[in-house]
Length: 250
Length: 250
Image (cartoon, rainbow over all chains, first blue to last red; front, side):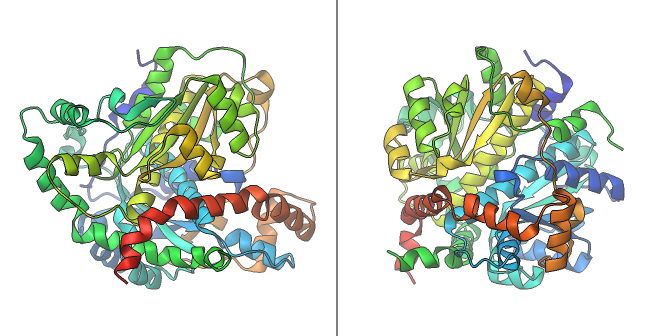
């Protein structure tokens, strides 16, 4: 069914969090970034800026701010992708215009633009033999992250990526199972999965485990965790400037 | 410098908005969707639901709601990617828990999850000879879109994708130029581009054109357009349920 090797790569690629102590050559870094920049982008506007973290001290501070995950600081190539609603705004100002403030839709679209580029980078890295991992925790602690990276009100974290050559163990790790397609796809209209469907999905993914027990532990570890609640606070905080004009007019 | 054909594909792929009248085989559709589901996902949670639009009347209504772009209704394969903050919440409820409401961070993370899967689908389609285009306008007109697709408060549009076999003209169209890397990449810290840098970037991309004139027209056509302002209103609107609990505690 799968028709070529390139396609197989989408199914093979898995997150890597354990890297060899081996530098990534500059031309490989540039190729990965360029593959990201080649990605589709709303109105071809590239509503993002890419920060390459080259200072070890910065990586270590971000590893702490991102739910204390030390492996982040061990990655030889680390990027923070920023949703950038400022570059075009500045162009308009320099052209003598005085347009509206960016809105929440602009922010969301810019975050999506950044993440579309990110996924191209992740797959390009895979084709080059590099492992990678998304760090969604860059959405947390926005005050510290903004101060550390010198962010602007109109430039907010979208995601972070770490790259490197995988250790043998990381390369051999099984990719976590995905839900079968029928649970994630609906025809024409959205409808929620019923309780029996959700329990069946759970059984497909985790045969023999107890649904209630697993969900209770998972909910505590993920959804009710300090980092998830911090993420919600932080995102609300950096979103605030994007909602102001609109609030005023309502 | 580019080391293999697969990598070249990231640089070759461009948006396609004009499709042959040729159906996409079911197994190709499923392969594209599965490549999306294989994408990285926050905590392997797949925080999205994929709607396959099979009714022509629905495609036509969405083409109107998405800034009236008739080509959407001509695409043989159309997906709406929904950020789904409900599936796990339902699991927690069915396990007897009563956790917090989803927050704005949960919503943003789910939108990013959906878009990461989308970009895998776009590239998988490219490897299978299909063209595609993102329809960011699905963020607009949330009341009508939600009613049409039977959405839930916790399930919001993230993006839409149209796929099909490109017409010769679409296949031969030049890919729009991207900004050179140095304008989009910063070392360690964010800094805005200066006015001379932005004017130089513009000259690199559009040699011989007048910056002020171009920006004035572009700003009017994009940033100040009705659809951009509608997008901001609409996103603010579907984000509102995600901000309630947090507002209450402040």
